[in-house]
Every structure is written in structure tokens, then in C-alpha cells.
Length: 324
Image (cartoon, rainbow, N blue to C red; front, top):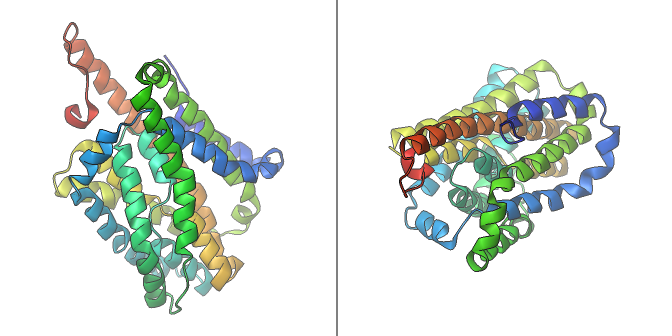
């Protein structure tokens, strides 16, 4: 049976094109992005338990791996791509800033859709943000030649407001009202997918003018930056013998930077042209993340069907963290 979550990669591309060619209906929706994102996080929280987070913190290796790749591979990739595409100074600075940023909250959403480890993803994002308080300005100062100030309190408060509180609310409801979550669980992926499609459309609409002014070289550099991040996270997971679920989570966490922070820093310290790579990254990583999340989800759903068919009549249910 077709559903929004299964058609998500195609729908993400379709809504992006529609929003680009006719952005006017969505321009006034900018203030809705944060509440919509919080609602998605709440849906994710309904699928989690306290034990999920205990499990993650008892095995910190994937988190450490994500931090290392986040603040080494991504900045270095930004430098190399900027040189390879001979980008202007402003665009190069924009690329470097994105490369120096921590993981973004969008990674948590895509991990949920990809049937990754949401508790691990949230923990990675929070930890990389804390590290980014020091690492982001330091990396920018080395690569771009200018020290910038990062409003760490504001970033952490945003994560608490947009991510931790909604997820905690969902976890608490699951803990105290399991019957309710069991009833709504089968609808959560489609609800979250629909909301994310709306968020993607709003982001594209808000940046439609900027997209039209950026050359192909910047698009290519930004796209490759994101793709290399996704691949490096996944490969690093495989090389360190992580589970498939953890590899997916690593890929998405590393590949999806906090582009909102990157745009804000670029605008404040370098100017609007330097902010364009971040704006493009924000759009592209949502589309690429949607596509890869949708494909991984479809792949997992097929495995679930196959395994549950084989286990028909048995009590044990399919566990993606063990059976993938």
C-alpha cells in the first residue's frame, strides 16, 4: 500500500520544484517552521523509550566517531571543493562556515524516516553542538582567517526548545500511556513525512530568489559537500563495524550540517554572498536526506516483510537494530 512515507523521496523533489516555481503561497509561513519541526520531534518521541537513550550513552563510540568526522572531514572537504571549483572568496567562506558547523536538527528527522537510531541521532546532534561552541569558531578562524563568535547559549536553547522538549514529551506519553502510542504508532511516519514535506517547501520558497542567482559551480560544490558527508559517515560506520542502523544514523548526522547557523554566521561576519552556500545547503541536504531516508526506509520495510513472513506464527517481532 502506497503511503506518504514510502513516496517521500519523490514527493520531496516534487514539492521542492513547485515551491521554487511558485513560492508566493509559502512566503508567509516562515514563522511556522519551528513549530512544525517541534511537532515532528514530538512524533519521533512517541516512538522512543528512556531505555533507548540509556543504550546510546552506554556505547559512546558512534557519538565520538560522528564528532571526529563532523569536525575534520567536513571542513577539509569544504576547502578542497572550494579550490576544485575555483569559487570566489565569498562563496569559499560560505562553504568553510558550513563545513565548520555541527550537525543540524534536520538529521534527527531524516534518521527517523530512514529507520535509523533516533536516540543516537539526537545524542549526536546535542554533543556536536556542545563541541561546536569551541570547534566551529576555531575551524573558521583557521580556514577563513577570521575569528567569529558563536552564540552557544542561543543554539543550545533552540535545540532544547525544538528537539529535546518535544521528544521528551513524546517519550513520557509512551511511558505512561503505552496503549495510546500503540494505537497511533502506525500513523506517525506518514504524519511526520507530511509535515517535513511542508517544511521543505517553505525553505525552498524562502530561498527561491537566492537559488536563481547562484551559479552551477556553487550548486555542484554544495551538493558534493553534502554527498561526501553522507558517504563518509556511512563508510566510517562500516569500517568500525557498526550496525547498519548506526551506519545510517552516522551518514545522516555527518552529512546534514546546521545550515541555519552557517547562514547566520555568514550574514553577521562576512555578508549576504557568503550566506548563499549555506542557504543552498539547507535546501539540498533536505532533498538528499529525504531521498536517502526514503530509500533506506523502503529497503527496511521490504526486509521487515520478508522476516515477518518467515517468522509467521512466532512471538518474536522484527527488531531493525538486530535484524538489518
